[in-house]
Image (cartoon, rainbow, N blue to C red):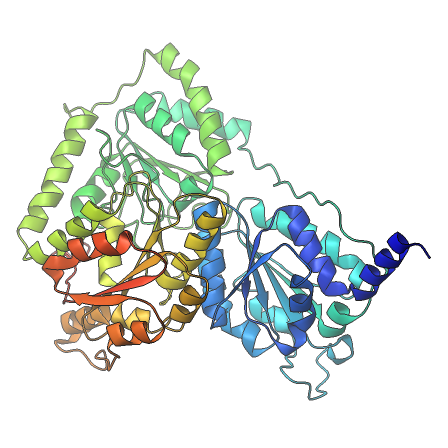
Length: 565
């Protein structure tokens, strides 16, 4: 046997099903994997030692899912998550619910008990579930069980294609322990291809939409999260300017339209003055949004005009209001609509926008002034200054990650993302998203050679969901500045209960000294008063690796308008 043949034979002897997994992922373009090792998944992790893939070790599976989610949102790449069987897989489900609800492309590879234990036979194997992938059915696009090594490459390739095809989302694969560990005859995976399926709009629907818009006098656009996922921003801007249509972004769509554009209603979807503009539109274009709870101002929105709704997810169309439903990727749909509007508006002599004698620009300016006036009437100086101080020191192109906390609820409406990206957990609304997602995002940007420092914002309650990830941040030297707003409890729930019942019950929390706790992980931290948050963040954002800023303050939400207040 020649030396070359001997080396080849040795390599083949070492290879198992786990190698096929990592080889296929690498061939598809994956660079990073998130997760936690587990007994049935050891074949996966052994294969990583022979792979160029970089592994990020989280401390809780749910946080690993959030990290893979944040990685994908920040980089535009597919997030990859490795999970162990049973408890490990189940612990990740809440994180996957967020990715599924928000349309984040991910490949989830979960190990399984050996093949002989499958089929709901209660053999007493460790971590055994009757049907593990059934547990993931509610939070992933699809689920696959791979029962032989030769099926691994094609299954992963198919899953990747599905994950990146709109509507994007996480796809679940399960591989039994013995399939991952057994030696294989399958040659090394050299190439793999996964192109997203085309999802264009139907021609007749675009034609009908144009016929409505060419004669509309009061068109308005709602830009939801699907606008950003479909990379539809250029066509959104072009259409808005051609139609002379005001644009408001949902929390998920925040950043899809220039914040200070003369047609921008920004993201004040929770304000009755903005809701009234949407109601008065004769044609309301809704892109990548279900007009759900928040975007409809808690279902108080009652449009009087016609609605054109564009979404890649067919279940979203007309889910809340009758509409001309166009199932399509937002980018493809708006590109087609933009092109079709050229000829229609030229024939019609241009846009006929007229808001009862006002120009759309005058309407936008007056509406934003009304929003400001309403806030001025409330005692919200602390909150508005706090958010403004943060915005003033965060670089224009920095990405930010927000947990479900009062500061984030303000951010939904008033954060100007500028050239950066605004990411929050509004899809499913689970606690603990901000910090692990920021770790994933920062490391992904680092691998891409881009600005890698990011900001995470949490409350003291939500931070405890992900506090163990301080170890992950330190281990990988993740450039994340974590702002923890400490108000001593679940602040928004406290507000809700006081407003509803006159008192709050079980919302107050014992919590650690966050500064000492962070320092015990080797992460620099400091505690500051709210008026010093700007200076503290400026210094932290200039730092190296992870750091923490804790602010003791009680923030309030602006008064809700859906209750008639």
